[in-house]
Length: 296
Image (tube, rainbow, N blue to C red):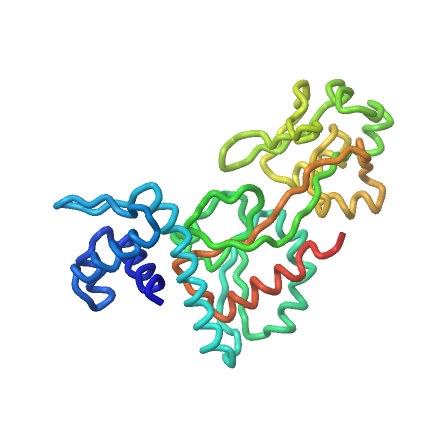
């Protein structure tokens, strides 16, 4: 418990970068906060703050410790909130931002969510731009790729695969590449990230790198458009399996280099770490983690 009190004092000081301001939040004196943190530093064997007569700043060790401690306190707050509101029915409006392609995997599970939680009103924003969760007043966002914002809490929704596809007409006209090297002789339809302008890498090589000689025939900043261009026979495309599934089943697309292993992609759901999970957000997160990408 002594360490827990020290952690609380440390997090509040790290938030305000002031012993005085932290003391006001905790209802104790600045001197008491300073002594508690000094005791914590002695226990850990590291200095958490640089102290001068004018300011308090985090050390490198303090910065890393703060990220962990903040999450611990938020988990404790969430646990208290979960217990205190266990009997409360999830209700109200929930704003969620997803990539445009998200409707392909989200819509099939929404009827079941709506039936289970009829009092939750979903406000879905399908948008490929990188939104600011807090400034955009979103309760949560669903995004793929590497997570870089440490101010957001997250849970993984599940992996998906990328597949190389082409139309039967294109294969009849240009042939089917049998090796990665043979892709150099084909037109590649590439996805361009709308937020950065960079081309999505085709991670096909055994070491996870991109083949060096890909010939870009067209770029699209929308995956649905990319899928349509590939179905029309313009070239070979690299897309998520859930986007290609219907077209592959109907025969309007065929797989390319089917036996070649492509590293999986990953979607996650994220929400502000400073915001306690409301019952409606908690059930949405739990439901999506259970149901999205549950099929092989």
